[in-house]
Image (tube, rainbow, N blue to C red; front, top):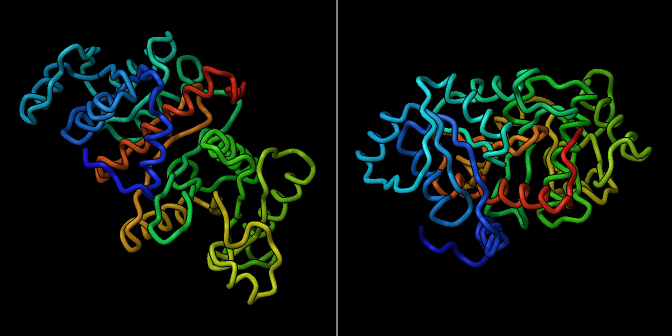
Length: 315
């Protein structure tokens, strides 16, 4: 893997993982070249110890076609993608793995196995997804949530979504993450429900119902990202122009925003699901190897923080 430039935000993530022991990771259905290579590359970098859960013959065939070595890599044989997801979740439940990684199966399959009431990995927190974006023209890592799991989250669900993101960003070294709660406008109006929910989330933060971050909203995207745009509109905010986290109103808005940054602004997006008993590395088949490694690095830092009890797993 080429050495990234020194100002690369993912390079800084990898640097933080240096010296940490690799984390046992259940990889669900790594049955195509990108997912298998991503898991094995993360192992070569010392981030994870992969436990491959899926059709053993198919995994070995992909490895042979791609020239990938499977020496000393554990494989748990499972007949199909549903069984692969269940086997990977069971490896976590029994303590064999501390991370869960999506392979070439659909996201819904692995999340369904995670969400099972009796045999899954649910906690008291809502599951939510965070994109960790390396945007070339933004001055620090930018985290977008939720763009992959919760379609139209309620106010209470948004509270959990922002709690999950704050916990993540604090583990990554930001003591008090700044959260911009996005809408189409920066004024509260009953015509746009997301503006009312943004105001309520800010009040929840003021009253201690959401801890660890600095929230402001509603903010339109321009005045969330640009201090000058906020000042032009007369907005006085510690968050405007400098957010760590963008909380989007719904999945459609978040998904479009993350993909626009990726395909128009040259950003790269690592992805992780939070709120379960362990972090879930949720990657796409379109992700670059660098983005996959970034996802693994974030998950590894989270796993080590849980080992040292810096961040408690939600009950």
